[in-house]
Amino acid sequence: MSGFVGWKLAGGGPVDATGIERGWPRGTTSTVRDLAPGQGLVFNRTREPIFHCARPDGWAVVCGWPRWRDSALSAIAAEADPAAAALAAFERHGAQLTDKIGGSFSLAVVDRKTAAVFLAVDRFCTRPLAFCSVRGGIVFGSTVEGVRRHARVAASVDSQAVYDYFFFHVVPSPRTIYREIAKLEPAEAIVHSPSGVTRRQHWNPPLWSKGTAKPTADLRSAIPTVLAKAVRDCAPDAGYGAYLSGGLDSSAVAGFLSRAREAPTPAYCVGFDQAGYDEMDYARIAAKRFGLALREIYVTPSDIVEVFEKIASLYDEPFGNSSAAPAYLCARRAAADGIKSLLAGDGGDEIFGGNDRYVRQAIFEHYWKLPTWARKSVLEPLLARSAWPDRLPLVRKAASYVRQASVPMPNRTQTYNLLCRLGPSAIFEPEFLAAVDQAGPFESLARCYSAARTDSLLGKMLYMDWKFTLADNDLPKVRTTAEFADVAVQYPMLDDEVVDLSIRIPDDEKIVGTTLRKFYKDALADFLPQEIIAKKKHGFGLPFGEWLNSFAPLRSVIFDSLSTLRTKHVVRKEFLDSLMNEQRLEHAAYYGGSIWIFAMFSRWLTEHRVDV
Image (cartoon, rainbow, N blue to C red; front, side):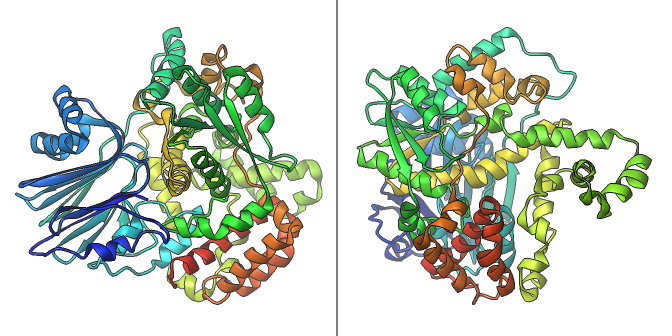
């Protein structure tokens, strides 16, 4: 792993570096550098850039690929390194230094004169930071595990975080799995000083709303230009490759990468020998169009058996996205080929409007245009609160629509959530539920939804996805698996210029009718193959439920984890029995995904020697 652990303690002496080094995943060989006595350590095993600078009046660490918006700071970064630029920026601008920096980064600055610590992450938290206030100071680092292993930190499992994990399948920021440790949220900066901790968001742009000017043809023609520049700004050389799923974004990134290099670009695609899950044909179309050197990786149930425990061990917190397994196998193959850095297409759906739920929720929103009396006095009592409509096929569809549509946003986005469908009391032990706030996840969704600077439904959903889908889920999935394989990863779709361009596109041009990403598709119509432009949204799913039913060795590994979970007094034994013996056969895709989430939590506890 790459990263750092730092601390600022009033009157504190040096902290045992060896103890922190043991905090990194087993089998990791880290390089440790002492920045200043008792102040911080840098760990750098992977190819992720990490810079540090120490002076008598302070020190700084910067991870990632920052870009300075100030010519003087750019010059310092070029002559010395980004950490020296961060020190200079803090000296000149204080906590407002985030106005002067962009790109993909996390940074920490310690000001010895004021005993202040400044921490910040980029717009999408592509490089994370965690911290813990301790007696007389603060411990912070680029991993939750690094902070947890510090000698001054006494971390205990947070029951609310456990509940949040089962709701979101990750532990969303600012909470971590440990009660005492917090994560920075996307575009957040904090200042820790002797007077306390202040937190602020340094970027929250106004999103498009009705009444603003329509984009011109120049904006549409700018998309391929800006995307190509975003890829070139990653400075790709012979050691670069790309993830390739055959979708719009990975194909575009791989295509622009191929243009930026003289040699054929290695592109890594995961396939599944399972109907409805394999997109290899589209990856082959992209490879032919752009002259890519396609590396086909067909994942089998045996591969999942091999990496299940590994996936649980490499995440600092429970992580329930099953596509982490194929993502790791993809990065591992790239590393074996000598690839040092991969470009990923993550983010395009969330900035240009490419997820099916955007259209689905817009259809549900029409319901709220009906008069209140019609909704509350007629439709809901007649269709949503009675069982008779379910006996008639045509009426059943209308009743289903009303039941879902009558739930206000953003809670309506969770109607397929297992906890909402079955009810928490059917899943969790009463003692566990008594210790948590069941409304907590909905409150987190509502805070993010209301924080979006727009009156548009699509804009609010995009903004929620920037946090919950990208920063909390998809980016950690790709980043962590790539780091463990010793490969760096960058996200050109989340380049500042690309994102700034996307927020200028009106909703009714992002999505036209039920056509997702219409503006984006039109902009790339001459670049991408037509088959990829026209293909339906697919996603990066793992046929885990189907394999669980058909492959006994996988079933054995997963059921062992679920059996261990039965002893933790969190999940009801009756629910686990039903999940293992009935529901997985009933609906393999839906309940199979749920089984992965519960089994991964149990295995994570075992791998990290944590109890609840």
